[in-house]
Amino acid sequence: MDNLSFEESLEQLEEIVNKLEKGDVPLDDAIDEFNNAMQLVKICNEKLNKAEESIAKIVEDNGDLIDFNTNE
Image (cartoon, rainbow, N blue to C red; front, side):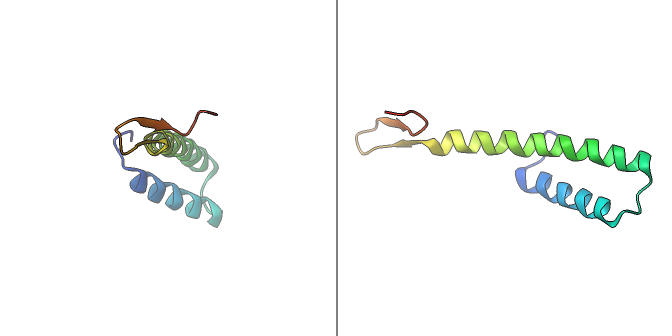
């Protein structure tokens, strides 16, 4: 599951949510689906954090890196 792209993880998460919203999933299956969803949320969050870190640093004309996460 860790090797899924952000888009694949999000798509699977949406499928699980849709399935659970219908309400016709047996309790044991719903718990399994919820656990899977939580793993997918974690994967998506990690990928978003990595993307945010990458975007937060850009190269200026002189080649210096700017970290927008600092309060300088």
